[in-house]
Length: 591
Image (cartoon, rainbow, N blue to C red; front, side):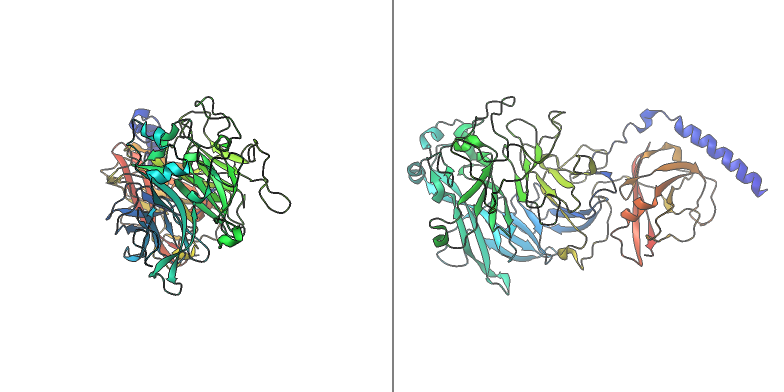
């Protein structure tokens, strides 16, 4: 009798599977993922991605998500921040955020740890300044940050800034104050206490000390340069006349050098970080190297149009950093090139040429700094406009050689291999966005942290439900037919089955199997079969289930951050004729 029942059920399953395959494609026409996790591959670098939505305000969020797209921690912003400003996690677990008046740190519970208000110096008599964009922590715990000082119209004109031409810009008011960028190194007054003790300036680089109108003086910036695409009017930006605007910084600890993105020059610059002006025999921080726009120092052809870029290689770039020691490409420079002048972005890796003494090779007068071309580049030039980020954005080289890229205006993060293949994709959902909505939300920067990063050690970071909404919840059974959901990660073979349980209210033939992700991974195969029941662990209930399988290497990566001897909530998402759904069940991770 039992055999007849099983035969009957097998026949029914075959009929149902045939019916599912015959479902018109229009039923699944809405199954394209538009927010949250889009793709996950086992070749992606496992870790946690930190980001702050671009317009986050006090009370707004900062997220840390895992590679499955699940938030594992969330901070609430307690004080104002700069919308287009840095956020990073210190090794002690403090989260640092930038403002227009400096920067501050918050604890894991979102309480304020300390504040550096650059407009209110702790030490009387120190010059105030206006922070923007960036803050970089040095190995000694000091912070490096760009900040504007203000010069009068007379001071700007005396230094060579063309105030008369600036007044002719119809899109900007007459110049009365010029904001001139500086780089400041600030340290805690008491290193044992940290920035809670207050702060002081211990090093400063002022572009005002490096003005010259001499093209042949390569150690100084050329003040007479205007971006050919926008002219001097392009220096009125974000409500102020500006000179400098260093929107990204990096530091090389062995060379004791600073690299900066001189965004309005369409160049990157490297300066030394000498501690005393006596050592430099003049203003600290000689300009050692520059790259991206030789026309800015009279050594190349200017940008004319998107189809005639002259010798300009960078355009309004927003991220520059040395690739860390031990990473593929170590000591090379990685740049997010917005390509604003021509409408297509790229990520560029260059290797500055050094002589036998390790110094940057200086070109002859009229010649450009090398290299002539990037060592590595990711772009989508073959499909114009498909990768276009006119502002903000970032790129980060990962320890496995992949590169994490943030298309900031789109809030789209993706990780590529050295061959340019995408192995991880995520789109930041706007508040209350459901899967399927076209509701991305911009993000200034995105950073990936390893699971053993010191700032995460001891943190309670269990995965939660995705940020995007899933209106429907389906019942899921991991290891259907088994009475225990125990998984041993040391087993490298076999497959893991997960069933979406059919019921009187759910016909599983309405589910698109290709849309389903378990911890971000698609199934390798599936079948419709009555395998499970809510009440019993070893038999079905008469309703067909959709049974999907994942291979063992994939499951091991999915559980990579789970602690041995603990329960882990596995989550599954997908699409059916009723819309997007979510389901979950706990497993016990044995080893």
